[in-house]
Amino acid sequence: MRNILLVFILTLFCNCVIENIDYLTPIVISDEPQNVLSNSAVLGGAVLGEGGKEVVEYGIVWSTHDTPTINDNKIIKGSRLGSFSETYSVFNPSTTYHYRAYGINSIGVGYGKTYKFSTGVDAPCDPITDNYIDLGTNLINNSISISSVDLSYPNWAFDEGNVEFETSSFSSTARITVQFNEVNKNLPLTGEYTVVTDPFGNDNNLSTGEAQLYITDFGFGSLGGATAVAGTKFYVENENNSVTIIFCDTPIGDKYVFNGKFSYE
Image 1 (tube, rainbow, N blue to C red):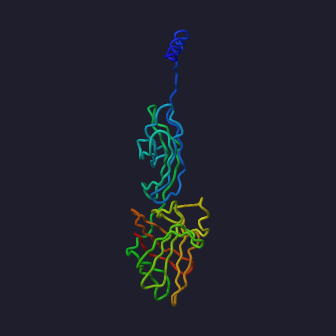
Image 2: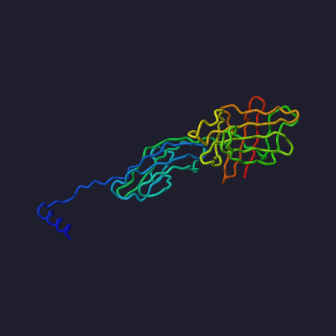
Image 3: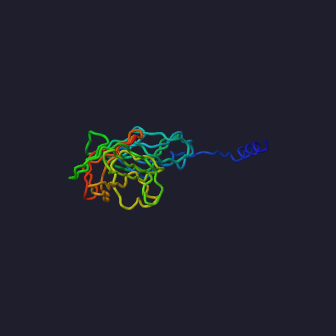
């Protein structure tokens, strides 16, 4: 009661009125795109300020033109203040996109910085037979019919990735091993992968675009195996965590040229 009376007296004698409050659209930042593959990219941002009015919605927008808005493609991630970053698998291969984070309050829409990224290519070949790899050698046994594919999560020194696929075959002593270094040990996503010789650097170099690839074979009359050199390309298709690894004239050292695919489900 005392506080109310004080306000009344001040207003009566001073005729003080609070006015000209300027409200703003939300203050938003966008994260730079990361781990861009054929149909996916890690995108995100944050709402740093509400502008004096509650943020009722925030998320990302994207388009193929250079100024995406909420009238283009949009994914809602939350409301009020907040930050977010995740992988979005909603894009087309071989396409350039523009994206930014946004926030909406009753004043209008605030946007973060616009970034441009280009998605990778699809596999240039389409092997018909699954779990079959032509090794590209002059040996009598110049191919592998794969009987099983094992998934493991290596954590010892001589295995450099944290997600590993290894094939085995009833008819061959050859084994193909592919290692990825993925965030939170997720399965690799659809896209073109590049072989690196540096064992993925360190924990700050987790990437959905890098891998290691080699074949071992110490059977009678074999070539002994080989390791793909840095820069070698191969491809992954991931549909609902069913992973297919595709080789299109993929050189493995100077002994093999892989053509074919194998799958893990």
